[in-house]
Length: 283
Ligand code: AMP
Image 1 (cartoon, protein in one colour):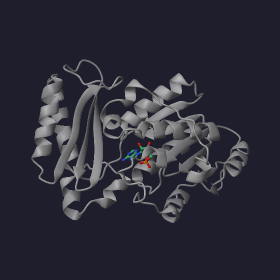
Image 2: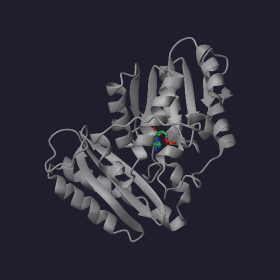
Image 3: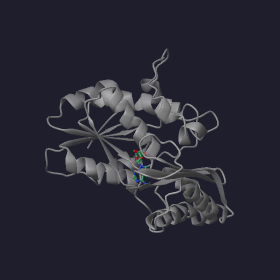
Image 4: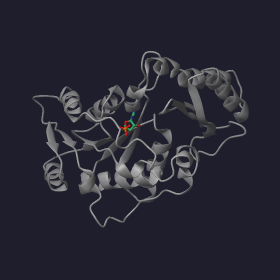
Protein backbone atom coordinates (compact mmCIF):
# COMPACT_ATOMS: atom_id res chain seq x y z
CA UNK A 1 0.00 0.00 0.00
CA UNK A 2 1.29 3.42 -0.92
CA UNK A 3 0.13 6.67 0.67
CA UNK A 4 0.49 9.93 -1.28
CA UNK A 5 -0.70 13.44 -0.55
CA UNK A 6 0.38 16.01 -3.17
CA UNK A 7 -1.06 16.12 -6.71
CA UNK A 8 2.51 15.62 -7.95
CA UNK A 9 2.99 12.37 -6.02
CA UNK A 10 -0.51 11.15 -6.88
CA UNK A 11 0.20 11.76 -10.58
CA UNK A 12 3.50 9.87 -10.40
CA UNK A 13 1.81 6.96 -8.60
CA UNK A 14 -1.06 6.94 -11.12
CA UNK A 15 1.33 6.93 -14.10
CA UNK A 16 3.13 3.93 -12.64
CA UNK A 17 -0.08 1.85 -12.72
CA UNK A 18 -0.46 -0.50 -15.63
CA UNK A 19 -4.02 -1.79 -16.14
CA UNK A 20 -7.45 -0.85 -14.85
CA UNK A 21 -7.93 1.49 -11.89
CA UNK A 22 -10.92 1.72 -9.55
CA UNK A 23 -11.44 4.88 -7.46
CA UNK A 24 -13.19 4.92 -4.07
CA UNK A 25 -13.73 8.49 -2.84
CA UNK A 26 -14.20 8.79 0.95
CA UNK A 27 -14.06 11.31 3.76
CA UNK A 28 -12.25 8.80 5.98
CA UNK A 29 -13.21 7.46 9.41
CA UNK A 30 -13.71 4.23 7.50
CA UNK A 31 -16.26 1.57 8.40
CA UNK A 32 -17.48 -1.68 6.86
CA UNK A 33 -19.55 0.27 4.31
CA UNK A 34 -16.47 2.01 2.90
CA UNK A 35 -14.50 -1.24 3.01
CA UNK A 36 -17.20 -3.03 1.00
CA UNK A 37 -16.66 -0.44 -1.76
CA UNK A 38 -12.88 -0.98 -1.64
CA UNK A 39 -13.34 -4.78 -1.75
CA UNK A 40 -15.63 -4.47 -4.78
CA UNK A 41 -13.16 -2.11 -6.49
CA UNK A 42 -10.33 -4.57 -5.82
CA UNK A 43 -12.36 -7.44 -7.27
CA UNK A 44 -13.16 -5.48 -10.45
CA UNK A 45 -9.89 -3.64 -11.17
CA UNK A 46 -6.17 -4.34 -11.23
CA UNK A 47 -5.44 -1.37 -8.97
CA UNK A 48 -7.42 0.72 -6.51
CA UNK A 49 -7.06 4.32 -5.40
CA UNK A 50 -8.86 5.30 -2.19
CA UNK A 51 -9.08 9.03 -1.55
CA UNK A 52 -9.50 10.29 2.00
CA UNK A 53 -10.49 13.95 2.07
CA UNK A 54 -12.96 15.74 4.34
CA UNK A 55 -14.14 18.17 1.68
CA UNK A 56 -14.84 21.56 3.29
CA UNK A 57 -16.89 22.90 0.37
CA UNK A 58 -19.68 20.36 0.88
CA UNK A 59 -20.30 21.41 4.50
CA UNK A 60 -22.69 24.28 5.24
CA UNK A 61 -21.72 27.10 7.60
CA UNK A 62 -23.75 25.51 10.43
CA UNK A 63 -22.56 21.94 9.76
CA UNK A 64 -20.03 19.74 11.45
CA UNK A 65 -16.82 20.22 9.39
CA UNK A 66 -14.50 20.85 12.34
CA UNK A 67 -16.14 18.05 14.36
CA UNK A 68 -16.25 15.55 11.50
CA UNK A 69 -14.51 12.41 12.87
CA UNK A 70 -10.99 11.77 11.61
CA UNK A 71 -8.53 8.95 12.35
CA UNK A 72 -6.05 8.54 9.51
CA UNK A 73 -3.89 6.00 11.30
CA UNK A 74 -6.86 3.69 11.88
CA UNK A 75 -8.05 4.21 8.27
CA UNK A 76 -4.63 3.24 6.92
CA UNK A 77 -4.44 0.09 9.01
CA UNK A 78 -7.98 -0.95 7.94
CA UNK A 79 -7.01 -0.44 4.28
CA UNK A 80 -3.71 -2.27 4.73
CA UNK A 81 -5.68 -5.28 5.97
CA UNK A 82 -7.39 -5.44 2.53
CA UNK A 83 -4.11 -5.62 0.61
CA UNK A 84 -3.27 -8.64 -1.51
CA UNK A 85 0.41 -9.27 -0.78
CA UNK A 86 2.44 -11.06 -3.40
CA UNK A 87 0.34 -9.74 -6.31
CA UNK A 88 1.07 -6.91 -8.77
CA UNK A 89 -2.15 -5.22 -7.61
CA UNK A 90 -1.52 -1.82 -6.00
CA UNK A 91 -3.57 -0.02 -3.38
CA UNK A 92 -2.89 3.72 -3.34
CA UNK A 93 -4.31 5.93 -0.61
CA UNK A 94 -4.50 9.59 -1.56
CA UNK A 95 -4.82 12.13 1.28
CA UNK A 96 -4.83 15.63 -0.20
CA UNK A 97 -5.23 18.68 2.04
CA UNK A 98 -7.83 21.44 1.69
CA UNK A 99 -5.02 23.85 0.72
CA UNK A 100 -3.99 21.60 -2.16
CA UNK A 101 -7.55 21.08 -3.32
CA UNK A 102 -8.61 24.73 -3.01
CA UNK A 103 -5.51 26.92 -3.19
CA UNK A 104 -5.85 30.66 -2.73
CA UNK A 105 -7.62 32.19 -5.75
CA UNK A 106 -9.70 29.06 -6.39
CA UNK A 107 -12.93 29.88 -8.26
CA UNK A 108 -14.11 27.01 -10.47
CA UNK A 109 -17.24 25.00 -9.59
CA UNK A 110 -19.21 22.15 -11.10
CA UNK A 111 -22.95 22.28 -10.55
CA UNK A 112 -25.71 19.82 -11.48
CA UNK A 113 -29.00 21.74 -11.67
CA UNK A 114 -32.48 20.19 -11.23
CA UNK A 115 -31.39 16.98 -9.46
CA UNK A 116 -29.80 18.94 -6.61
CA UNK A 117 -32.85 21.10 -5.84
CA UNK A 118 -34.80 18.67 -3.62
CA UNK A 119 -34.19 16.29 -0.69
CA UNK A 120 -30.62 16.72 0.65
CA UNK A 121 -30.04 19.65 -1.72
CA UNK A 122 -33.01 21.54 -0.26
CA UNK A 123 -31.85 20.95 3.32
CA UNK A 124 -28.15 21.55 2.68
CA UNK A 125 -27.77 24.50 0.27
CA UNK A 126 -24.46 24.34 -1.61
CA UNK A 127 -23.75 20.78 -0.48
CA UNK A 128 -23.90 19.16 -3.92
CA UNK A 129 -21.93 21.97 -5.56
CA UNK A 130 -19.11 21.03 -3.19
CA UNK A 131 -19.59 17.31 -3.85
CA UNK A 132 -19.65 17.52 -7.66
CA UNK A 133 -16.71 19.93 -7.73
CA UNK A 134 -14.50 17.75 -5.56
CA UNK A 135 -15.53 14.51 -7.30
CA UNK A 136 -14.76 16.06 -10.71
CA UNK A 137 -11.32 17.02 -9.35
CA UNK A 138 -10.79 13.50 -7.97
CA UNK A 139 -11.76 12.01 -11.34
CA UNK A 140 -9.41 14.34 -13.24
CA UNK A 141 -6.51 13.60 -10.92
CA UNK A 142 -6.92 9.82 -10.72
CA UNK A 143 -8.31 8.98 -14.22
CA UNK A 144 -10.16 5.88 -13.00
CA UNK A 145 -11.82 3.29 -15.23
CA UNK A 146 -14.51 2.74 -12.59
CA UNK A 147 -15.62 4.81 -9.59
CA UNK A 148 -17.41 3.34 -6.57
CA UNK A 149 -20.16 5.04 -4.56
CA UNK A 150 -22.65 3.86 -1.94
CA UNK A 151 -26.42 3.61 -2.40
CA UNK A 152 -26.52 4.95 1.17
CA UNK A 153 -26.12 8.45 -0.35
CA UNK A 154 -28.74 7.90 -3.04
CA UNK A 155 -29.07 11.50 -4.23
CA UNK A 156 -25.30 11.91 -4.33
CA UNK A 157 -25.06 8.82 -6.56
CA UNK A 158 -27.78 10.18 -8.86
CA UNK A 159 -26.15 13.62 -9.06
CA UNK A 160 -22.68 12.23 -9.80
CA UNK A 161 -24.13 9.83 -12.39
CA UNK A 162 -25.66 12.88 -14.11
CA UNK A 163 -22.36 14.79 -13.95
CA UNK A 164 -20.44 11.84 -15.42
CA UNK A 165 -22.87 11.67 -18.35
CA UNK A 166 -23.09 15.45 -18.87
CA UNK A 167 -19.32 16.09 -18.72
CA UNK A 168 -18.39 12.90 -20.62
CA UNK A 169 -16.11 11.51 -17.93
CA UNK A 170 -14.77 8.31 -19.52
CA UNK A 171 -15.52 6.04 -16.56
CA UNK A 172 -18.14 3.66 -15.25
CA UNK A 173 -20.01 4.42 -12.04
CA UNK A 174 -20.62 1.47 -9.71
CA UNK A 175 -23.25 1.95 -7.00
CA UNK A 176 -22.81 -0.49 -4.09
CA UNK A 177 -25.52 -1.64 -1.64
CA UNK A 178 -25.82 -0.07 1.81
CA UNK A 179 -23.94 -1.95 4.54
CA UNK A 180 -25.94 -2.14 7.77
CA UNK A 181 -25.40 -3.00 11.42
CA UNK A 182 -27.08 -6.21 12.63
CA UNK A 183 -30.15 -4.22 13.75
CA UNK A 184 -30.53 -2.51 10.37
CA UNK A 185 -28.93 0.88 11.08
CA UNK A 186 -27.01 1.99 7.98
CA UNK A 187 -23.30 2.31 8.77
CA UNK A 188 -22.14 5.92 8.84
CA UNK A 189 -19.16 7.81 10.21
CA UNK A 190 -21.72 10.01 11.99
CA UNK A 191 -23.17 7.11 14.03
CA UNK A 192 -20.34 7.63 16.51
CA UNK A 193 -22.00 10.87 17.66
CA UNK A 194 -25.08 9.00 18.92
CA UNK A 195 -25.62 8.48 22.64
CA UNK A 196 -26.57 4.97 23.73
CA UNK A 197 -30.27 5.85 23.79
CA UNK A 198 -30.06 7.64 20.42
CA UNK A 199 -28.22 4.67 18.91
CA UNK A 200 -31.11 2.39 19.93
CA UNK A 201 -33.70 4.86 18.67
CA UNK A 202 -31.86 5.25 15.33
CA UNK A 203 -33.12 1.86 14.10
CA UNK A 204 -36.41 3.68 13.49
CA UNK A 205 -35.14 4.75 10.05
CA UNK A 206 -34.78 1.12 8.96
CA UNK A 207 -38.07 0.15 10.62
CA UNK A 208 -39.90 2.98 8.93
CA UNK A 209 -38.45 2.17 5.48
CA UNK A 210 -39.47 -1.46 6.03
CA UNK A 211 -43.07 -0.49 6.83
CA UNK A 212 -43.33 1.36 3.52
CA UNK A 213 -41.60 -1.43 1.62
CA UNK A 214 -43.99 -4.03 3.06
CA UNK A 215 -46.98 -1.90 2.04
CA UNK A 216 -45.50 -1.48 -1.44
CA UNK A 217 -44.98 -5.23 -1.71
CA UNK A 218 -48.61 -5.75 -0.64
CA UNK A 219 -49.67 -3.59 -3.60
CA UNK A 220 -49.80 -0.05 -2.18
CA UNK A 221 -48.84 2.46 -4.91
CA UNK A 222 -50.05 5.74 -3.38
CA UNK A 223 -46.92 7.85 -2.76
CA UNK A 224 -48.62 9.98 -0.12
CA UNK A 225 -49.74 6.87 1.80
CA UNK A 226 -46.17 5.49 1.78
CA UNK A 227 -44.80 8.84 3.02
CA UNK A 228 -47.49 9.01 5.73
CA UNK A 229 -46.74 5.50 7.04
CA UNK A 230 -43.01 6.28 7.23
CA UNK A 231 -43.76 9.54 9.09
CA UNK A 232 -46.05 7.73 11.53
CA UNK A 233 -43.34 5.22 12.38
CA UNK A 234 -40.76 8.01 12.85
CA UNK A 235 -43.21 9.93 15.06
CA UNK A 236 -43.52 6.88 17.32
CA UNK A 237 -39.87 7.30 18.35
CA UNK A 238 -39.56 10.20 20.85
CA UNK A 239 -35.82 10.77 20.19
CA UNK A 240 -36.30 11.04 16.42
CA UNK A 241 -36.88 14.48 14.87
CA UNK A 242 -37.92 14.02 11.25
CA UNK A 243 -36.51 16.50 8.74
CA UNK A 244 -38.00 15.04 5.55
CA UNK A 245 -39.53 11.84 4.22
CA UNK A 246 -39.76 11.19 0.51
CA UNK A 247 -41.18 8.76 -2.01
CA UNK A 248 -39.70 9.94 -5.29
CA UNK A 249 -38.99 8.83 -8.83
CA UNK A 250 -35.62 7.02 -8.81
CA UNK A 251 -34.20 8.98 -11.76
CA UNK A 252 -35.68 12.48 -11.46
CA UNK A 253 -36.03 12.46 -7.63
CA UNK A 254 -39.42 14.19 -8.02
CA UNK A 255 -42.07 13.33 -5.42
CA UNK A 256 -44.56 10.74 -6.65
CA UNK A 257 -48.34 10.72 -6.32
CA UNK A 258 -48.38 7.18 -7.68
CA UNK A 259 -45.51 4.72 -7.81
CA UNK A 260 -45.34 3.27 -11.30
CA UNK A 261 -41.66 2.54 -12.01
CA UNK A 262 -38.48 2.42 -9.94
CA UNK A 263 -38.81 4.64 -6.86
CA UNK A 264 -36.69 5.88 -3.98
CA UNK A 265 -37.94 5.98 -0.39
CA UNK A 266 -35.65 8.30 1.59
CA UNK A 267 -35.50 10.28 4.81
CA UNK A 268 -33.37 12.53 6.99
CA UNK A 269 -33.86 12.38 10.75
CA UNK A 270 -32.17 14.16 13.64
CA UNK A 271 -31.25 12.45 16.90
CA UNK A 272 -30.14 15.33 19.08
CA UNK A 273 -27.60 17.14 16.91
CA UNK A 274 -26.82 14.11 14.76
CA UNK A 275 -28.45 13.99 11.36
CA UNK A 276 -28.89 10.56 9.77
CA UNK A 277 -30.12 9.63 6.29
CA UNK A 278 -31.26 6.33 4.84
CA UNK A 279 -33.17 5.00 1.85
CA UNK A 280 -34.61 1.95 0.10
CA UNK A 281 -35.07 1.46 -3.62
CA UNK A 282 -38.44 0.09 -4.76
CA UNK A 283 -38.31 -1.81 -8.02
P1 AMP B 1 -18.28 9.23 3.05
O1 AMP B 1 -16.93 8.94 3.64
O2 AMP B 1 -19.39 9.28 4.04
O3 AMP B 1 -18.25 10.41 2.11
O4 AMP B 1 -18.63 7.98 2.14
C1 AMP B 1 -17.78 7.56 1.10
C2 AMP B 1 -18.51 6.58 0.22
O5 AMP B 1 -18.93 5.47 0.99
C3 AMP B 1 -19.78 7.19 -0.40
O6 AMP B 1 -19.91 6.74 -1.74
C4 AMP B 1 -20.87 6.64 0.48
O7 AMP B 1 -22.11 6.53 -0.18
C5 AMP B 1 -20.31 5.26 0.80
N1 AMP B 1 -20.93 4.74 2.03
C6 AMP B 1 -21.07 5.39 3.22
N2 AMP B 1 -21.74 4.61 4.11
C7 AMP B 1 -22.02 3.45 3.46
C8 AMP B 1 -22.70 2.25 3.82
N3 AMP B 1 -23.22 2.08 5.03
N4 AMP B 1 -22.79 1.27 2.90
C9 AMP B 1 -22.28 1.42 1.66
N5 AMP B 1 -21.62 2.53 1.25
C10 AMP B 1 -21.50 3.53 2.12
